Length: 208
Image (cartoon, rainbow, N blue to C red):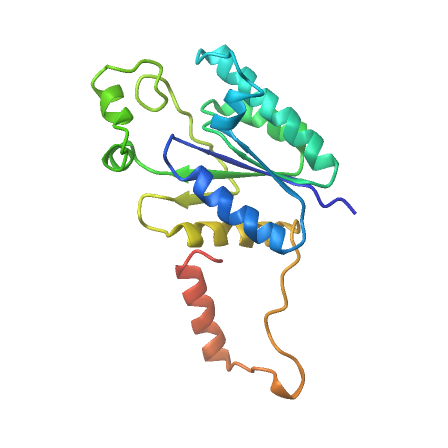
């Protein structure tokens, strides 16, 4: 049985890709899975050293990450890619290449990112001091049909966002659903009204 798959995070710089990746990595390893993370900044230091920020170089960078994810996936490793990956077409290309692919879009506005950017890069980009800055002076194409959308503008905590991804992985059959209810004489039984209330709360939190 194939157990490998790829979780592909896309979103603007500072939108929380690495943060949610770290939470997911721990959760998946706790479930006994082999996990490797390909962080965009780290990849550029090693695998894609020497590439610039033209569209061609950005696409080459994403194809390299995609190739590594494909190899890991078919060898029963969970690969987590956390890269801006601004162009829709090349993301769809690696989706087709990998197959077992879950796209997670980190949705956060430029205004929010600029407010919490301690390095001030967004403000410099908005003032024209930095060129080729994705989302400001370079395009970012949001995915049209991502499997998961995480709202990292304050509407969700990182833990809630990670829980949404886990729930989708379980729904798609990539993860087994854990048995949470005790059995036997100590089994916890809900009434129909209580089940509806619990379900509604989980849905509000983004778990369902």
